[in-house]
Length: 370
Image (cartoon, rainbow, N blue to C red; front, side):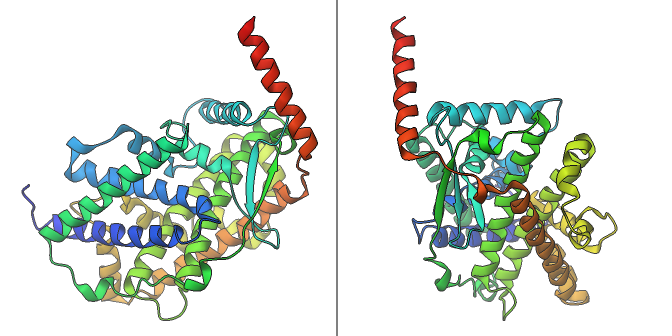
């Protein structure tokens, strides 16, 4: 493969992306108690990375399933009724796989009740690629993505010289490895009990919430505020930029197309958090520009942005604006949780669960016979 000087910064950016991703994956896998919460945001981010790298350097290797999950970087889909169609398909999956009347949605929370994520996020990320149908398919798919990451890391290492000092310091916080996570299952109708638009808004807010919790988990593991290394700054800014821009786009889209129903949520947010809607707020342009560097380019890559900023004024401006954007997301998460009130929803009792499951199995058996 012929590579030019233009490729250097793109390859260098990809090298840092992949190196950090592998380290993060090792961290996620340290604790089986909670890795399901964070593995799916990580898998989606990895598919973004792999797809964009292959699109530029290895088009012959491109994979349709990876491409579909890559496009789940967007928290909504464009097109008339497309989001409702996806929502209905995901609900059909949960009710058919688990139960129509029993508990069919799973949620994860901290011991003090903070919602960390749900099984709906995994369904949203993987539904279009059809890799969540069984544990074997998601395992094989994830294995393939991981193999590609390591292959491309070796390819980059063979073609450019890396400053080893820049990749030192990604030591994730060991104290965060084994915290306790509670789980809670509910019936979908107890959460999605409003109009079609209201239900869709709740779903899209729930997906946004898990994106924010992933950024929060990374922040807490990196201990960003004290003596952060270059690679820690590199990966944290990019993680926040993607989530800030996509969550913001999701909110603006709902406010534009479902204004009446979205107002119920919008008016629960305080004025400090509503700044996320302000196009003139400094972090908006900065984080959007960085988010758009998910595409590896011949002109300007993420590494170029950081290097140019470093030469001019140091990284304080970008770091401060990233922290401002991050803090607005954390505040937003608080209002999403309050609006959804998941902790106040009661799970179906064990006896009801057994009854519902037996009834549904009997009905399926009768339908097959007749």
